[in-house]
Amino acid sequence: MTRPVDIEVRSLCKRYRLRKRRRIIAGDLLRLLTLRRLEYKSNEALSDLSFDINRGECFGIIGPNGSGKSTLLRILSGVTRPSSGTVRFGGSVGALLELGAGFHSEMSGRENIYLGASLHGLTHRQIRAAEEEIVAFSELGDFIDQPIFTYSSGMLVRLGFSIAIAIKPDILVLDEVLAVGDESFRHKSFNAIREVRQSGKTVVLVSHDVHQVAAFCDRAMLLSRGRSVMLADAPAAVLYYLQTTGGSGSTDYLECGALSVAVKQGRILLFYQGKPITKGYGIYSSMLSACGWMDVLDGTWQTERLDDKSLRSTKVIDYLSMSLTWTVRVLSETEVAVELTAQLEKPFGIDRYHASILIDPAYTKWSTQDTSGKFPAIEIASHEWMHVNSEPLHSTWIVASADQAAALPEIRLSVTADSGEFTPTVLNTDYQLGSRVLQLLRRNTEPSGSWPPGIRTLFEGRVQLRPP
Image (spheres, rainbow, N blue to C red):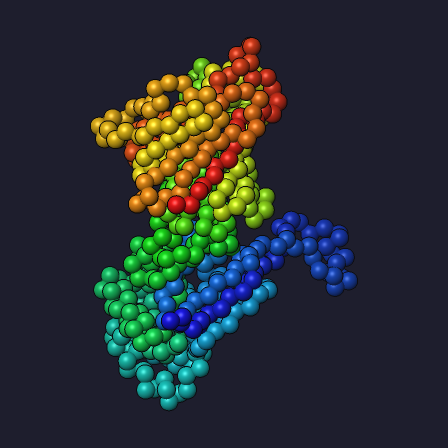
């Protein structure tokens, strides 16, 4: 049976105006004197969010710092108004957003109980009836009659959460402030949240403890730069988040239906229906020069969003006077186009380079237009890259398929535009988490052995998925 919707969000956007920081000049003074506005730039904290939260559901919101989590909770709790879009509720909302929110620092904890509860619409009689319950739950003892500017952050959490639980809202909205309390109070708090859920109420929870979200929430939404990247069962959303945020550097996301793509530090990770298709480095490239193999993963990448379905990620290699750029486009929920280009300021000697995709070891078969075969068992003790194909392959595409029981889509890696010949290579290795490796390898065909200055397309191809 379909549960009724408690929170309905449609096309939600939130923009903040940021005044440009610079010295006041004559033009600014003229604008002030003529009552004209100064120049501002716009920062979009949330962009075109649409989702529903069902009654009785525990809904998690996860994402890196600056992704828009707290802004979204402020809108859901009524503290902030959206710039555009709509939010509809199926009941009353109680919120605990940040330390000391809604409290008066000069007033005592007991006085702030009356202040905070009244802000949620409770009458004086209702607050008096709940007062002792709130005091007992907070475990503040004699401190309840002390001004709250004397409280520690943990004491503020105790008081704020005690009030939020006691008012018994239909929808409980909680920010990650519960992480500040001590272990015993956190345990007590989550037991109280479970009781709220068991009574049929709705809970919206933001927490950096994603393992707690996975265990406690029914569904979770991953936010990145104000956009929804994935909305799925909580364990699947958390797994996706954890597998795309390790190491340094930020992660940018694209999504289309069942397909999600994460671009991070020169690697491209694919997920289908919340399941990871790639492993380790995902899709990446390396070049072999006189200095040895150079992974494009090294260094710092800067990523820009071209539109809702494409990203461009670039890094500068100063010591080589070269910059590399990945362009990633999601063509459909089963196809991704990738392009790697190099811009050279001076000649660069290169022997060979490749585009590779590291995939799940559940893939058992491979094929090209020339031949086919099976992946052998992975040797756990071996860390060598092992060629599976015994004969050279002469094709510009390669396919991997999994056993039907694995429920993984077939993967095809292909070249779409090329001035030379790529040679497919099938590798089997434990070097990256026991991955299978599909690789398109190309040797440098320049007579001089060096690339001349200018822009060169190293690889332009596609990854296509065929659902199981």
